[in-house]
Length: 291
Image 1 (cartoon, rainbow, N blue to C red):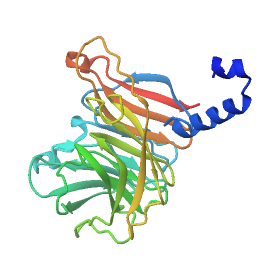
Image 2 (cartoon, rainbow, N blue to C red):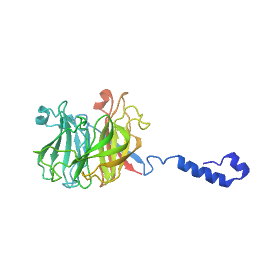
Image 3 (cartoon, rainbow, N blue to C red):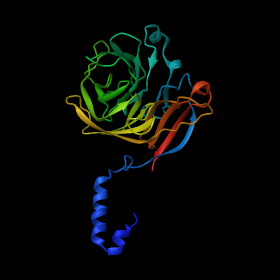
Image 4 (cartoon, rainbow, N blue to C red):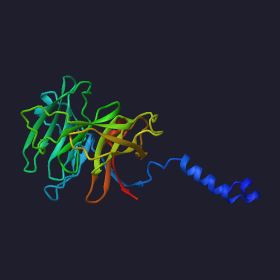
């Protein structure tokens, strides 16, 4: 910062020190102070099978990345009304979970594959005031708790016991909400979140107007006051880190989709679907690294 002329003329070094101290208190640290997520590459996202979400799978070893889209919904689930799948996640112990919703009713569904390969379904009856949509899941690093969010402008995230991995859960019983994450800043249209540490979430937002954070389609970071444990609510501090890439041969509205953080490589991946007919040709899964 240049020295003001008034201070140069009078040689008031103490005044400069005081001014610098005041500025450091008045100007908050940027949201990305902990590091910058830099784009490192991209590949085409198939609109049928890679348009909703993605997850890196550690167990079994050498497992391929998983994706969801309208083309990955099992026929039996579709016939029973579960016609939308969101952003999935996989635990460090090998449980893989997909979130499902339908157009009406009072429940959500989580489709779970165990490390051994067997599938099961867990249904959650909506809590009072809970939105019907089921956009994403994020499994805590200890595997016992699962976070989920609601569409629209929200100031909370929902905490559930992880279906299949938490011993308190059963496919034959309702999957209950266990706790809530209270956010210190509202978020809008969150499409996916993933844990990058015990108390840190990275989230993709499809926010279309940018009023909340001064940018559309932001990458968000949510720092929790404590690891979720299902027995008590926790607080979450929200910061916008950067705008997600919006590049296409077509003009129009992009859609930010699911997100994945691979702790083995430190790679962050986010799906962005292109506008109009270009959704078929140049939708992308972007990769980022923390610099």
